Length: 271
Image 1 (cartoon, rainbow, N blue to C red):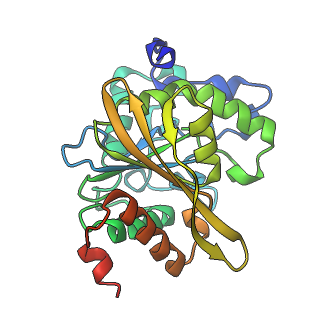
Image 2: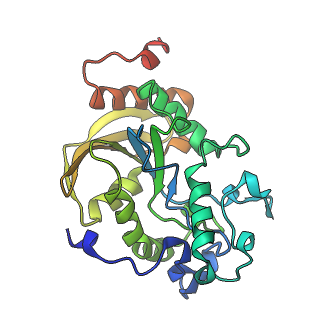
């Protein structure tokens, strides 16, 4: 695959493509270092990777003020740098360590998004969870933005996705063989389909019908990257917009796809 043969010209922590862009620059929280992954992709326990849009600004700030260092991910100010390009190798290693320990560091509270995703994962299989390293999260775009993703102009979104594609593909390439990939929301499924990836999707399935949002459709396929193969699932609605009952319905659907005809203690406990 040509996309995976492209040489990285910089560490993602130093990337300033969107920061310097006339279209996207004003929307990027430039002082927040990019976050390509929450958790450790090299974990020996890894079973599932969830995929979302981009890191939330409140991973770094609370009401506009930086959180205490131990309660957030890396900011440029932590390393006395004015620009990302000035980060040293030691600075980058520290930022990477903090990302890897996101779920295991007891001093840091998780974003509410991950609490909802964790509820889904443990209801799919009792061994799937972020804390123990069997689950990791990656984002389509690694930079936090000043506004929510949904409020960004389509032109801004498009350039950010394009600029981050190299790094996102690199994250996918580093997922171990056999690990399940779950795509949270229609936009993620669409972008995965548009990327230079070998995905064989099967026809969409009805998961549930929301009274306000209508049908939530799911898709299942196989992703092949080199000699590695992954089962991949996605759904139209976003975890953050689902109530607990809808998340349970989604968990049942995912469980039946990944573990057909296999009862799971996590699901049984809900009955």
